[in-house]
Image (cartoon, rainbow, N blue to C red; front, top):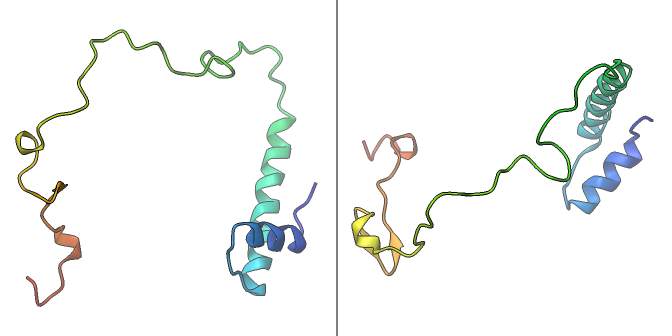
Length: 101
């Protein structure tokens, strides 16, 4: 099974993404490469391996056996500052401009 340009355009339309023709060709090549790798992996004989535990319908999560924790807390005890019910946090240094420094 190979991905076509029409497939990529269809999915892009469903996702409401604007993709130009050059990017469409690139995505077709990338997706077909991934499918090629999956085809190689599907040929690996795993019949002698034990099944992976925790995967499937039962899921990987275990039952929670710990004490319940109240989800409502006084925000003033956990936040440095609050305004109108919102937590105020300091601006990240990576988002400062040269004139702010």
